[in-house]
Amino acid sequence: MNQQRLNGNAIEIESLVKVYKGAVRALDGIDLVVPAGSVFGLLGPNGAGKTTAVKIASTLSFPTSGTIRVAGIDVVAHPRQVREAIGVVGQVSGVDVNLNGRENLRLQGLIRSIHGRELKQRVNELLEQFGLADSAKRVARNYSGGMQRRLDIATALVHRPQVLFLDEPTTGLDPEVRTEMWQEIERLTHEEGLTILLTTHYLEEADRLAAKLAILDRGKVVATGSPEELKQELEGDTIHVELREDAPDGTIRAALENVKGIRQLDHDVRCLRARVEHGATAIPLVLQALESKGLAVDSVSVSRPSLDDVYMRYTGREFARADEEGARQQSPAGEEKR
Amino acid sequence: MKELLSHSLTMTDRDLRRLARQPWWIVVTLVQPVIWLLLFGPLFKGIANIPGFHAHSYIQFLTPGVVIMTAFFSGGWNGMATIDDLNRGVVDRLLVSPLRRSAFFIGHVLQTSVSIIIQAAIIVVLAYAMGAHFANGALGLLVLFTAAVLLGGSLNAVSNGLALIFRREETLIATLNVFMLPLTFLSSAFMQQNLIPHWMQVGARFNPLNWAVQASRSAISSGTDWGSVGTHLGLLAGLLVVCMAFARRTIHTYQSSV
Ligand SMILES: Nc1ncnc2c1ncn2[C@@H]1O[C@H](COP(=O)(O)OP(=O)(O)O)[C@@H](O)[C@H]1O
Ligand SMILES: [Mg+2]
Image 1: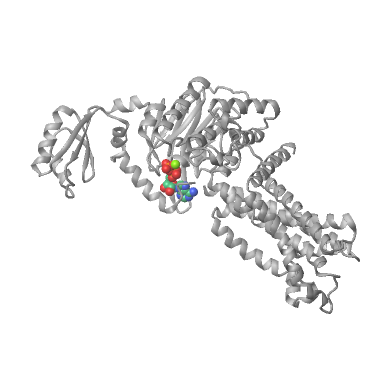
Image 2: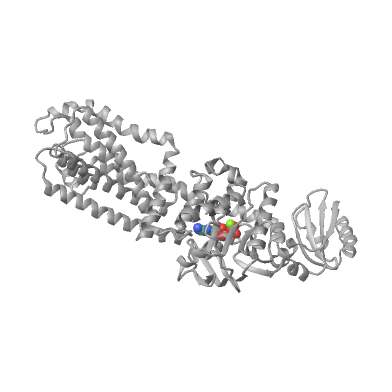
């Protein structure tokens, strides 16, 4: 129950592979080191393997191969000790909707052998901290989405874990609730020194919260570093062009094939995104090339590299498109819930 | 050991709170056995006059059957709640906590036991009011309740284990129906053993539901064969142990598939 600050690495993952039945290679040999005391972001589009990684590191699921240590303990050899040291907020809320807020917190405390006055105190403290004191006696079924998520996080903290897993904590929340959640997560690391492994498919969330992040794509870690480092590695600018009408197949690529200074290009029928050496020089050339193929331009903008560009640099795809595609592939099987 | 007990009771407490918040469910559980007794009693009244039928009245004969059937189904359908817990992430959250694995199932079994005892008590009181006589007093009733709890608990463990394996409501319902319905017919719950076809009598010998009916019916009738009561209760206790062992293993199966 004493909160020990971890020194060194909170999570160490080496060559982790997970193959599901039916030969889905959800994780294809990932290596990760999560330093203690900060938020580590695991960023990736739908289906990248984020939830799988969290399930294995939190002792729910078993690795096919590889070693994973959490708080210095091997998750396969000593799951029980790992469970004492971690708090987990899954992608699907773990709130028991048939219990009220207080009962949810008490249940977690009792399982962790916290009893009596100590439990009562801790429960009250968390209800207060997460703004649930007034709703403590209401059944969680009647909570709003934001309240349920807050209760979810609170129940993961009853025993003062050293490492907290948050699997897509803001997915499905309203924008303003999301911002509140971000503030809460920042507070947990800054004030309480908690190590948080946070997965997300929101670029801005990773950018804002993660001290360090790993970009996961199709079961592989394609890049690691702080958001700043990752962006700085990309020299040059990004330009976005929106066309007035849908372009026939192949014309965009054909038009821009010979334009100098384009390093990478991703597009659909209407929009294109190109990484270029120098925005101001490239824009006129790009516009000219498009017009010459009869593609009228609606708008154009230039920006400094974002995490989106980082993702594109390493995977050759635009993040949003990969995300949609991943969601499409997952939903018919109905497996993404688990 | 102390931890296992504490974890189990924590789970039971949670289950009971959940039930207490579903008034509709309470009504159904309480009313259903009463309906069986009130409906089947008069319906089958004539059976007591069949030559070779021993019980003084059919109500008296029917009571242990209804108690045991109720326990059987209470336990058997319990896995449905676990499917709900799976879908809501509640099971995953429990499995990544230091909760003792067996406590997950023991907790459910204890909750079912509480429900079964309440239901059995209602049935017994009602049957008494309708003119049933219980031989052997408290001891006979104790056997009845014990048999009901052992059987319901076994079914409960199997049902929850299957829930973790299948993880889908439809599959669980189909599977439970496939083995629960035949067991209810292949028993003497509603018909005296020697009045059902021979092959069914043979089958019934291997039917846990029938063990429970036989033990409790004998224990509350005059001329109790205590040896047979003991054997049947022993078999039921063994069944519960086997079912718990099965359930405990399904956790690993579940974790291997998520
Ligand atoms: N229990 C499972 N059985 C089979 N395949 C699964 C299971 N869970 C996830 N997958 C597959 O593994 C891949 C990674 O999924 P997941 O880890 O949920 O991705 P993310 O959380 O990044 O969206 C997907 O292709 C998904 O369909
Ligand atoms: Mg996920």
